[in-house]
Image 1: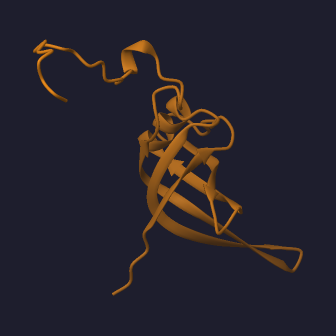
Image 2 (image 1 turned 60 degrees about the vertical axis):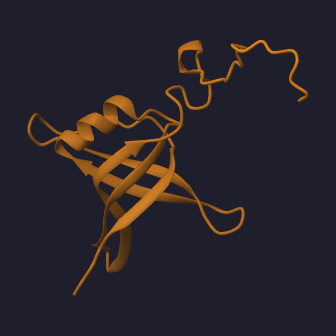
Image 3 (image 1 turned 30 degrees about the vertical axis):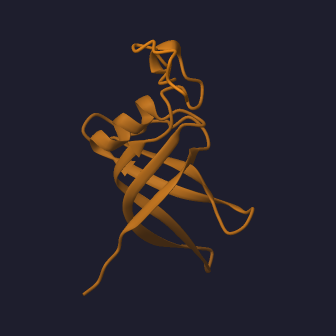
Length: 125
């Protein structure tokens, strides 16, 4: 059985630009992913159709994403020199973090405010 599945969690490196014509939309983008120790890996991604439209509309620079997809390896022969490019073909994604990536608004706040419904001052604790 062959299995080609990738899941990554990182941040979008720059705003995603939608390309192609209606019905043939696509986009390419880079996701910065924490690697081994203090290293950051920059992973190329490609998305097509409705996925590309949604990513280009909502996934701006710095946005935290989890992407799901499969690896794609392309080889290009230029003047006898073979170059290999590896990317993730995005099949699904989820946004992570707060709506503003770390800057919670008053409506997003989940801070606990204690209430004292039973005002029993006689309790020893």
